[in-house]
Image 1 (cartoon, rainbow over the protein chains, first blue to last red):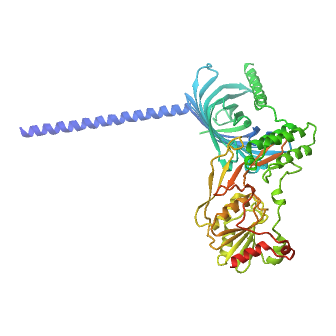
Image 2 (cartoon, rainbow over the protein chains, first blue to last red):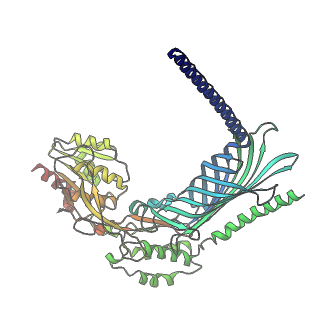
Image 3 (cartoon, helix red, strand yellow):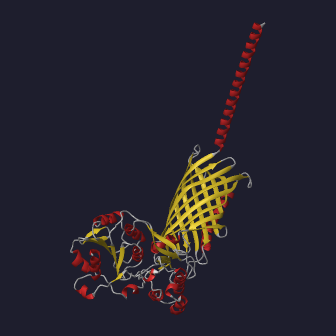
Length: 280
Length: 335
């Protein structure tokens, strides 16, 4: 009797172990299938997404008025180089400018006065796709965090030779794009506009010297600090079967603010460039 | 056809942006004589830091000089009127600069004895044995060290000072001759003065303009002097005259607070205000003092720092090739 009971117990134990093993195997198989599905989904999503690195070079022209430094209006031109990253997703678009460096040599109308203008811009913008304009036009709307450092050096001004604006701003960003066929080629057209709503501004003090009074930082909402950044670009792939391409672009950036009743700053910067887009 | 219309419209928009920019910027500042005069007067009115200290009625200056401005006056004539008005500020840091002239008020120096003759030093004291260490003219009087620094505009390196401190460390003392040094960079002030203090000290106080009103100043801020490199322990005599201006005035203010330093010669020329600049609509640049420097006992050094020992270069000594001030300094250190 005891022997029979022991045999039965062992048999049941072996069966239970075998059942457990089979269950684990099935679970593993299920996980593998799920993993494969996830991978395929990711691959599919990736195929729908575009990631580009933009290397952009071009010419710039600039118009500057900073009455804290000079009553004169200065204008001139120069060149810029920029590096950016764009990530196009099914539902939205990341536009990240890693850095844009601009140099302009500016002149005033009187006495041959001149100044050197150095500028650095960077930006992180996210724009969400909308269906507001139907199928042909893609309208995106989102936000943008922009940083600009704009320095002017007027060698005639001794202790005050360096005038600068360091601007961190947060605002609205929009983009309008569509596919086009002209000159027997396929192009993609895009228009961008950014409007900062709030800005944190750092610059030389309104009175005295920057070396004595340090720099002055102020928070300025729209109205006290006005800026508009607009751009147009045309993208074309190098060949039909390659995602890499080039882009012709024009960008206009204008900002203005006032320190006091007599100190005002107005800066307009135009950029015309040719960029190479490398798909990542 | 539709897409070409779109591109035409975009082209129009680009042209509009460029035109808009001009509208947003506004018209260029008029460079006529009246506007240039007004800009110069207004800049000085808002930024200059010594109206109250010097008891200057700047509104009266406007009333006096503005009627002399006419639309058809020449650039030279306009320059002269503005320069004459700025002359009232009695400040070597106030200059109007154009491509053809630079206005200045040098009365702080020209109305006083020079108290310095480099030719005497070179012919009768150095006797061609001087050394040139960086910007310094260095001479060893055997038991007393000496260096002459003609301008704070010439950079001083740590190694220049290391050499001087090491060379004269076993001498009875050191003479620093700043006579005729019209100033330059403040960084050189700290580089030199830092060798004569063992510890960080408060050396002076200063304040700067923070608003358009004549008496709108920041709180007084303490200026500290930190030790730099090897400390020079022996007595130091600093020679000054009315030609010591701006950064040299700062240097003398700092050195006067140090226990091992004696200032000898004449009161410095002054120039206690750090200058701020602007450019007028016709391209001329204008600078005015925008800060005030005070000693620890609140003495405003705009008109100069008085010496501990007042001594002038005796004309009879000078005629005989003797530098009275240097002789007295050598005598003091050899005691």
